[in-house]
Image (cartoon, rainbow, N blue to C red; front, side, top):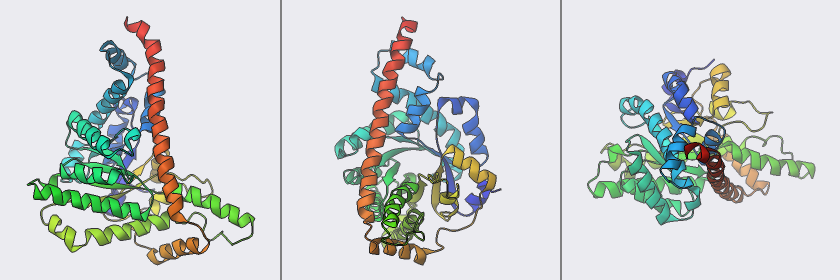
Length: 372
């Protein structure tokens, strides 16, 4: 049985990929923090489930309806109240880690994923309205998101860059972060007070590539058994290698001397989708210094129950290169697959965001008679 303290001693932070009013009011979030969780992530899908499937928000909803807000404003109010509460619970971790940990994350509307200026404006507004130093605004790693990341970091706004699937996108994200720090520094800002993580999505790549490998195996084109379930870990390990290179560079060293934090890779989508794989595969194989793993509830329970904590992130780097090379030789275009995963991720979060609005309208129709 592994403890989160063992993971922390390896240099990795464990964040919780979930939030709801019920978890906050019941003390469950506080309990998780007590056992070693040092951050919290959210997304539209998580909030849709939390708000739609719970009555814990009904009293707040009644008040917001009485105040005349539209459904988008009501959603933001509910979500921001939860994020503020989580940030308060995490504040001691923020202080004790010197701004490295202790963050609660809220996403800009995914409907703005391809709108640079819209993303910047909404991130600025959300960060200001949240009014907490230890919150991060989530911005997707679309091409339009890159200049937004640089702009926001340059203004001292903490950013969690989400939906990173490819090595190229990850390099662009890291460059945008460093450039943003340089902008902040040149304008007289304090680079030691801004933080960012690069959320590199893991298991979804295996899900997609395993399907392709399975089809190839049926056609007897190639023996795919040795490649099944290996692409995601290999991709993430190469991303970490790139992280070490960029943040070990002379360029970043100038910022480090002024107190700048590295932009840690955050392993996201770490639940195991294939029941034939170990249920903590994407936790155990990606542990190491200056990393974060944001873990959903069932996977966190599984890891605490039977996970093993070892420094694994740099082990098998040569094997990782071989895996990606074998996939290319087999005719599998990983870049094409990761581009589709990014689009599908934006689409899924957009649908969840729209579903929240729809579900709030349904709740309004039930609650309105109760507040008249």
